Length: 344
Image (cartoon, rainbow, N blue to C red; front, side, top):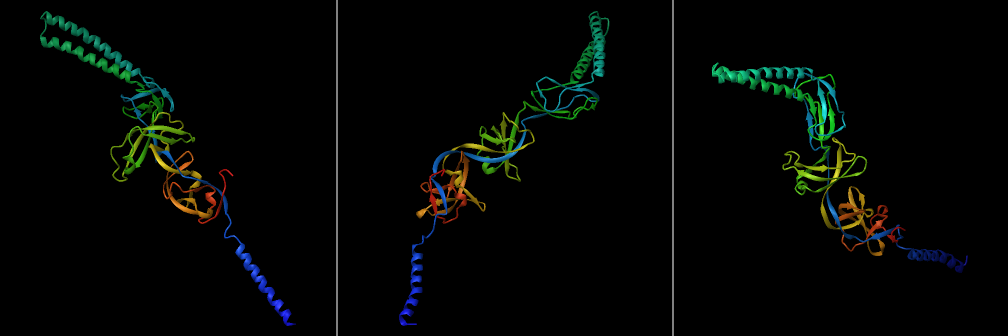
């Protein structure tokens, strides 16, 4: 092989190397990973919320029993769930014995009254000693009291509702012999329910009567309420206190249920971003902030209230910064993006 041919062969690899180097210099540093839309933080007025959970209970549950013992139940006139009115009969005892006692007491009263009149006449005529006449007159008073007692016992045989309400429990059946003071029925007064939420002391001191409450019913519908009372003391072990909220229209909520809700303390002017811009990873919340060259930086932030598709950002973001509003969940720190109008 000649010297000229050798030079040509050596030149070919050298040219290929130069071509490869030139190709490397022409390649872009990075390509956009994803098309995203951008949003600017906005200042908005949002309600301050305290999330809480608690039980649904009767505002006042009345426990019913009878005031006389040893009587048989003749009839129970209500079932659980029945709505009743004040004065409506709920339960009837057998009145035969009680009615007989009243008739006997009224007969004794008639005799005592006649004796008292006779004693008064004898006393006026000075035909008997004053002590004997007074004894006859006093007999009428005693007989009248016994008759009133018998009449009251007969009235007690009919158990009536002392308030409007709804029957919440029944533990008596017709034919049952009942004792005084035994629980027979329960009534939720005025059908009125309340939410009893436990709050730590730092939050409890911020709640006052009249604060609005919003709960989530078991059917998914919202239920509105108002704080009626705040516990004046704390549990010494848990350091929590109770908030009592009236529920005038409880919807599907029932006494004994457990419900989560929010206490709305009032509006505050806060910095907000679209809810879709917030990404949760490893238990923390992040935003992707757009920087130079359309490169995004993952930024950990502290968030607060959520309302109407926006989220409060308490710290970690400045008002003039731009954040990824759509597509943030697919990004990583340092990714280069292609910015497109929202909705594309």
